[in-house]
Amino acid sequence: MRKRTLARGLAGIWWVTLFFLYAPLFVIVLFSFNSANSTAIFENFSLAWYRRLFGNEQIINAFGNSLVLAVSSSIIALVIGCLIGYGMYRHRHRKLGWLIVLIYLPIVLPDIVFGISEMAFFVQIHEWTGLLQPGLGTMIIAHVTFQIPFVALIVYSRFVGLDPTLFEAAKDLYASPIKRVVHFMVPTIKPALISAFFLSFTLSIDDFVISFFTAGPESATLPIYIWSAIKKGVTPEINAIATLMIGAVAMAAIFSMLFNRRGRR
Amino acid sequence: MSYSGAVPTARSRAMVRETRHLLFSVAPGAVWIFIFLVLPSAYLMGVAFMTNGPYGLPQMPLSLDAFERLAGVGFLGWSPGNLYTLLRSLWQTLVSTVLVVIVAYPVAYYITTCREKWRPILLLLVVVPSWTNQVIRAFGWMNLLAPGTPLSSLAESLGLVAPNMGLYPSNFAVTLGLVYNFLPFMVLPLYAAFEKLDTAQVQAAQDLYASPVRAFWHAVFPQTLPGLLAGTVLVAIPAFGMYVIPELLGGGKGMMLGNLVANQFAGSSNWPLGAAGAILMLIATFIGLFAMRRIGKRLGGGEEVVI
Image 1 (tube, chains in turn red, brown):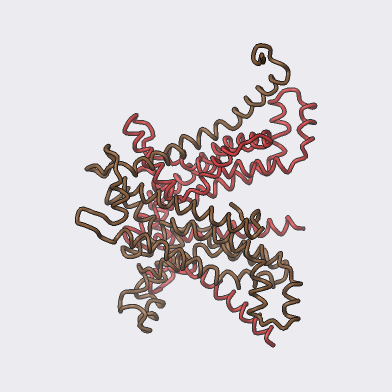
Image 2 (cartoon, rainbow over the protein chains, first blue to last red):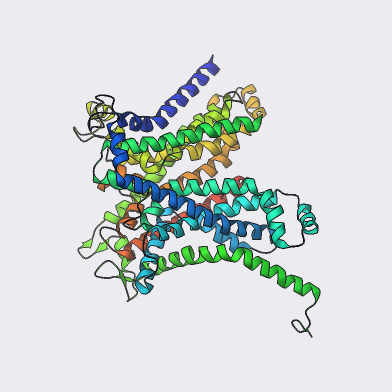
């Protein structure tokens, strides 16, 4: 008897928590279809805000900036991070404590400190040399900085999971180091490369704070655009763009669920 | 007598080659992080010890002005504003972490009681909201808590808030936003701990007629401590430095340290003061990480705490 009440209580807490987790997202989706310019009263179903969305050049630009930033920073971080990951593996018997500290620094630093120190530094360098004008360039630099550790750790753990004799075999098989990289290394760590790229991409697309402080006037990303729109005064247009972003996340969730299922079969 | 360098042996040549390899593979990333993160942080720390110039930019004589300002000493005598912000940050971190723990325990346990094939899906359901951008999530709460919404009207009719004020912006909204934001980070490690739970101990406690509370406290809780610790690291440390949630949900009276720091670089410019705040945040972060590691090691489950 007592056990059953416990189970019921747990299930109750679960459903309430689920409601709590999805209510704010649901409200955004609901009011994006509201015909009235209100986030309190739902009048009629309408797609007016979506129509306005696709006519809004700023939003299209922000979306483009987000994509350019995410793709280019992920590619750079992939190359640099891979090298570190491999170096860490190959020389894992040496004392590399300083390298570990360096790699964990971007992960443990609070993002507000991260963003502000970069911004202050870039501004000062710009004053002295004229380089590093705030814009997409500085944002790419900042994003690469926080992506490198994740790529390096993913690649490193993939190498650690490999049979060490494979490297000897590859050495016997291919004389030139370049051939070894092309025919052995890259194919064997391909899954790690793919997941590192997607993780970097997601981190970049999702980032707000670091982008916000390193951005220039012309390089607002989607989250920055939404932020400034909220600050200026809420319009249901934000609900519409946010709904599209929530939709993208929902798609990703469904994919990962299907992928998970198939992986276990 | 050593003649190293004069006649390179095969071994030393291999050493040189290995070192060169290490340099070529590791150097680009290490230099990148050094130039674009270590140097900027060092620069920021230097700024904290400089004087505030006319445009908010740092100026030369070195001083401790910024830290005095942070402690509340200003031109007009002492004012507690900045100290309140600090205390509020600590308080919000504490309250939201405790609330997250209280919610996460039953949720994580509930998932382990479900059938095995459902568990990944239930976990995914908990995690998915945190995949959406944090600005959007905070905006969702703004929509839910604004004056005139059903929740706000309910709170008004219960006399919890003054009429027409709504539940947002307020400290309550910030706490709620923090709990919402960080709940998955506690559920995941707790779930991992529950899944490894040695149920024989719980069974033994029940056989010995322990009350559910005592059984939980003596047989279950100690086993979930590593998960709790990992979760606390993932929740409390980022919560203390949170910027977006207090900025959107808190208003002027809900400001936390992150906003104090950021404001000094934007509106009311005072770079040294902002940098001093950033140093404080760094110190708190490292004390937090260090303390958790120590506790983790003492529990013997140190390696399970992901830092």
